[in-house]
Amino acid sequence: GAVVSQHPSWVICKSGTSVKIECRSLDFQATTMFWYRQFPKQSLMLMATSNEGSKATYEQGVEKDKFLINHASLTLSTLTVTSAHPEDSSFYICSAIGGQGRTEAFFGQGTRLTVV
Amino acid sequence: GDSVTQMEGPVTLSEEAFLTINCTYTATGYPSLFWYVQYPGEGLQLLLKATKADDKGSNKGFEATYRKETTSFHLEKGSVQVSDSAVYFCALTPDYNQGGKLIFGQGTELSVKP
Image 1 (cartoon, chains in turn red, yellow):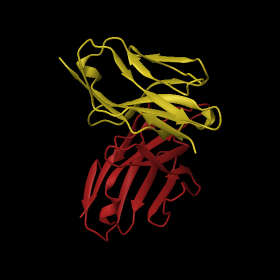
Image 2 (cartoon, helix red, strand yellow):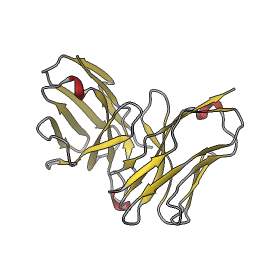
Image 3 (cartoon, chains in turn brown, cyan):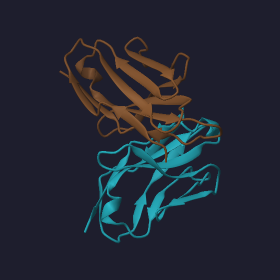
Image 4 (cartoon, helix red, strand yellow):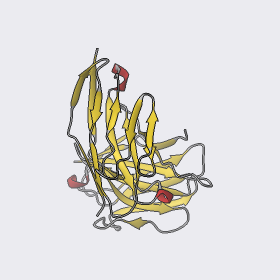
């Protein structure tokens, strides 16, 4: 299957700082990328959908000014957690789909964010 | 809204035991159903899928049948191996043409002992 790489795998940051997480499709062009958040022992919750070259579509309840998503190229989407607080600590996962007629999503390995 | 409910884990089995992980869903339309697996330290991988009622998805000895009458998509395997130890997620997408936009269950951790 196709490969999606997330970076970093884990990050610790101070409260009030911003953190950027990258999601790259390594061997295909990702027309659409998705960002999920997972709390311990809970399911993945879709945060937003991003299409290359256009603004992301956020799910209800997700603060678009706090979670900035950029999908500037067909192989890279970034999620920036701005002015992070301890309650933003979570596991963030991206997925990507792409190519004519492809509907299977491929997932990155996730990023563990801890805000102290 | 649409939702997915899985049986809680962790599930601990001995090697060669029979596995069932229950999954039920609520959806307003005609969803496609998926099982994903997450091995330790790795991203989610698609295990199997079914796109319409009565379809059976199968892969690596795992099977699940799309049951519209009971709104279920239970995962089964006749004989588990230690290498099957992972977290399993049931998921749906409301529209097959939006396969990337998934609604997940909470995940079920499976531990298989030798």
